[in-house]
Length: 116
Image 1 (cartoon, rainbow, N blue to C red):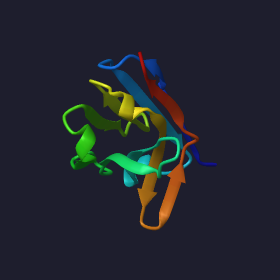
Image 2: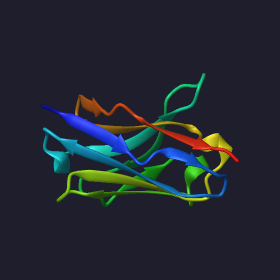
Image 3: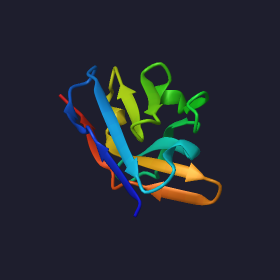
């Protein structure tokens, strides 16, 4: 059975940092590209960051470049999103995604709120 579970969200002040974690099981984690998406109220879900299966290639949304870093530990079946210099516009539900060919697995999301 596939499980994708995000954690690490919460309330943080502008300029603060958070680290999101995504623990996966039930599939061959090291064969899947992993990504973080986010969805703010009233907006469409958007891709924030993606990392290749082996970890050698990454992609970032322009608005988070230089502030966010995606990484993965294939031995622990976990992907991370380190977020620094958070802004109110980063407020959203953040979702972990596993992708390979036509297969996608999603977590339930973790809420990030950036507010003073």
